[in-house]
Amino acid sequence: MRKVLTSIFALMAATAIHAATYIVMVKNTHCQTVTGFGAACCDGAMQPYGEDTQPVRLLYGAQSKIGLNIMRMEISPSFTGDNWGDYDWHGSMPSARIVKQRGGIVFGTPWSPPGEYKTNGKAQGGNTEDENAVRGELRTDCYEKFFPWLNTFLAYMRQNGVKVDAVSVQNEPDWWVNYSGCLYTPQQQVTLVKNYAQLLDREKYKGVRLISAEPLGFDPSYSNALLNDPVAREQVDIIAGHLYGHPPLGNMKSAAVLAEKYGKEVWMTEHSVSDALQDRLPNWTEQLEFARELNECMLAGGTGYIYWYMRAHWAFVGTGETKYGTDNKKNTLLPRAFVMSHFAKHVTGSTRLDTKNSFTVNTNSPIEASAYIKGDSLIVMAINSTANDHTLRIKLPSYVKSGTHVLSTGNEKANLCQELPIEMEEPMNDIAANMPAQSVNTYIFMIDPSSTAITDLTPTGEGSKTYYDLQGRRMDTPRGLCIEKSADGFTRKVYMGL
Image (cartoon, rainbow, N blue to C red; front, top):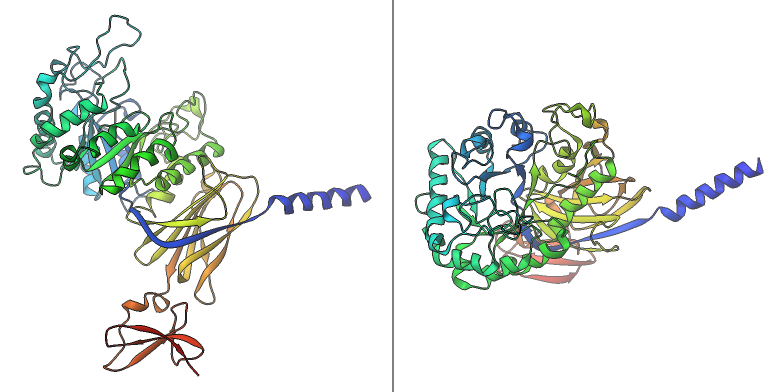
């Protein structure tokens, strides 16, 4: 019996040691506004390409469970495919139409310009294993043809009922591949954009935006070169890149510095977390890795996040291949989609707020958090990758009156996106929230309008006065140290009431 009691006390002591309270203080400092989240509708796992629109129906729009709003498609070398793959510009058309009907954004990325424009005469980037291979670059005498070629893509899509919102310069300009590709140095991209981007017909295709080339590891030398050139800078609307080999708080965060300075958006346009899985679906530890990457992209200054394939056993919608597990049913939502929905459903359209934490967030930190404001809601995202339950103490810049805790704790569907009420007896701005072990948490708080924005409230009637306590809550009569606000000039002063 003594041994049993000793073991129980030891377990209790171990639990006490590992459980902790973490603090996130949300500041009223506005950072970037988030455009949204999405995925690519390309070949591969989307077979039969162009015919099956069920993935976008499951994933996109307010009526979906996931809430994606950005779709990426390939601009292949020509609309006949240029002998590369069994797909063409029409392949993404049916899915693109649905995304647009649901209020989403569609953008196109060239894998390669037409082969006749290039130094190697073909769409292939150049096989690096072939010592006689010629680097596939855009010929300098064809620079003036590049943006008119993009105009033909925009025209084709519009004729088929899809208004494209943006086009990119190039997929992975720094990656020499033996499939469809084209190489650019940072300076070659500057030359192309500076001297010829005005040929993109923005007047005819109103609202179309230009996205920078999308380097493999979000190499900031590409975007910095563009943004440091005043002429090229005026042509580019969105800075983009991928995360292969370089997590968000490295190159992406570095690239976002100049982008923020010059008012440009920052989109992560391709990455696939745990796509190397050959024989199974991702486990929950790998889903938490994905959640942390989403969070870190927001902390890096990202305004858009676009995953790789939308349908794959390591993505959002099942393929039906039973070799990866019986849960990989074709055209059913996978757990990773619900992890994405924490951000897509709640962070899209919000503005990130700066935070001061009792913990440090680095790449793959065990505890991570970020915060946002969206209309009358304050939103805190928190990821607990540890094996213990913890408390998250949330200090908000405004008083809130109620809220919802959206909680995901495992790959089983019953554990995904559970909605739990956050009830308060009175408005609060300091809340102790449960943060279960190995969980993704979205805390959505409703701002109490009677206790915020003193300067936005107008007294009723000329000469009248209103009073507030130091937390901004309305008072019927002044008492103690409070704030008095009069109609003339909306001035405020400290008043020692009775």
